[in-house]
Length: 462
Ligand code: NAP
Ligand code: MG
Picture: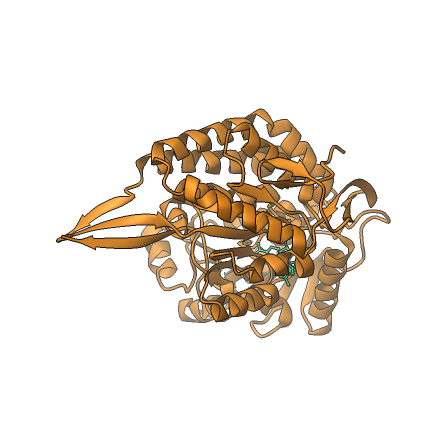
């Protein structure tokens, strides 16, 4: 697989000072497919300096100029869409059709949305006797995970550039190749040197050095709660802005009036998609006791149909972690109705599509993010019980409500402690604010709300 042997620093690919490398592994056959630099603290320092030096030139550019660069970036990504899909399939293991439809197409749409927003956004407003300017926050550290490797990069870098910020990106060690393709696209889009910099590297080394760097004004992180907590603590001590997207345990609430078969089938598909490695996945299905047995049977059938069609997990560690959760579900008394901890293949980090019935709200598999193709089906007595269960975790990122009547679903959704709810299978909207209530995070990504994260206000009084 094609890879750059440097980091993208101040407009060019340069060797990393660290001399260390990361092996990129294909999770389907466990073979090393490429090597990229594992940047060290000195490399991160050089990248932050480049971003700082570029800020005075980039921050005051006209919004129309930034819109033009983002539009060119969208086009440069679109020109690489097949290469992007193939790369994500190679390093994440996602089936090619899914890589094309989601991993390549969604970030192209999001980049396009920020080209539009940069052109239309009111960076200046009148409030009484004041003129309020919306100015860039400064140098942004973007630290991203592997599960939607290009989407999560674009969801941070595009709004940061639209705002007039400069960026240092540290992508996940498992998926650095698509981040390199992104850097190529930024370069081809004519973004000035130093405005965007890429340091591939390990979290506890390059990631930590970046999050702690005094030259960074805002840290935008997506990943695990444990790392997010420590980044927030460091940023808080330095009085730095922070944005966190930390995952979830979202509820798919099927009210009695719903089309049960549709709600269950879409719900299972939602969990199995991307092999369950989706922070907003509806991993808890809540069904009324009178419909419970029928729903479990529908879910079992739906999961069985996936059989071999889902991709592997990203690495051996995630595979072991997910298998551990499945074993824990069995040990705590949940009933396995599909899949199980036994890997379906000898080679590759695969886990079978798994469904648990008789899951009660306090079980580990009903509380913790598993990040694999594992669905927990829970029983509720009445709507108040469903609401208690839906709101009964530390997370609040997404969710779904199904009902015969849309108003009934909306009324229930308004009582959920969560950042997004899909009503009767509503589609993903790349302009809608995405982010969590409670421990699912701080701040919002996508659309105008995502742009606002990278701006700070200055008020002039007349
Ligand atoms: P993670 O370690 O939190 O990874 C996220 C990003 O943070 C990666 O770029 C990672 O680098 C980096 N990082 C790790 N330690 C760091 C540190 N001390 N300082 C700064 N940056 C650091 O997540 P993971 O280990 O890949 O996944 C573990 C679990 O996190 C998953 O099972 C899932 O529950 C959750 N998760 C959630 C999301 C989400 O979308 N919210 C995404 C991924 C994972 P490396 O790549 O080198 O580790
Ligand atoms: Mg990690």
